[in-house]
Image (cartoon, rainbow, N blue to C red):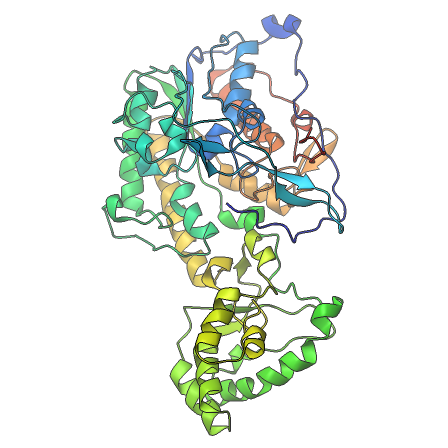
Length: 521
């Protein structure tokens, strides 16, 4: 992911903590705790980036050490379960990844000082983790960033995903096969987020593959068919439980509850910004004739108007709207607009409208809004428009509708919700049938987003940067967020197995990292 957050300035950033948690208990506490009837002697965690400890747009050592499975394993050890939890640690805390010396994954985000306050930026530096240098296993943390449900059962997935390639046991290995070979006594499984998340974070650029049972034909941003998900999930559990292991599964949160979709408002254009305010009269005059044409065509709800007294919505492209490009062009010509300009207007605004509260703008859209779209300007100049005129019609969200990648329209949100509901129904049914613990991440994250969750000394919320729950990519938790997940799991294990495993003080775990000249805290 590129550094797309450079224009988000944060006036007040508070609550930062050190990079390592304090010890939760002294060694003298060990005899006080126990694991009850649970056999936690060989804990194996399976999943994607959420299991690996991915945060701030990258996988890095301190993030891995604060992964929810590693936090859990540390607490299991205090209760006498042993200290044998291993992870395929990266080589540094930058988070970048090299393949043959070429960087194929970016470094992590940190907060950097700016004229208008701290803003997220990619931490500079040369990473040292080389995919070609295998990590020596076996590893108890089998979290693979980027993995979808069916990827865990795909032979040779390590050749497609460098994170798994670092520690796959062979060129044809499967993630679940390698995990099952560890003969876990207890496992955790959190998988399925990427089966819809990549579609969501791309602004819906993929395809809803519901009804297509062949994942080999899927694109990287497609929504996985619920039956493919169910078959993959069931097969993963079969493999993990073949030796008699017990375990827990985690369901999937609603993407609308994460900061990636809740930070940028649908109406971000503020007339107190003098650069925007100066353009409002010209913009409204330009759109006046277009709005008359919309009214004539019976689609006056697509009218575009910018407010001088309050925030205005951006203009978006909505592919679910009827395309009125041809008729719009003809109406504009009949109204006296020259043919070339009318044609461009018809094509540009045939499926355009202003955003509303039902739309979700992506976090990455923040750097695109009100920016000149040079690709669009070049295309308009190729059609014969002078450079100045082409530039005027190429400002994202003002004169050029925000493209699909920047916004989730309601139709796309419905597709995501339908898949999410289907996946969670499968997870719940399989958990019930196999007597597994079910962690309701969907409900817990919804509560964090709605009201926040109290902890000694603070409140965990989903507010971007300052809330403490989510890292600077807006998708993955902070160490504090992962500690919260670990506590949820420990509490459920204690309840089911009559155990007495200590939880952690989540306030002792860090949130986001401030970049100091030398590279962070």
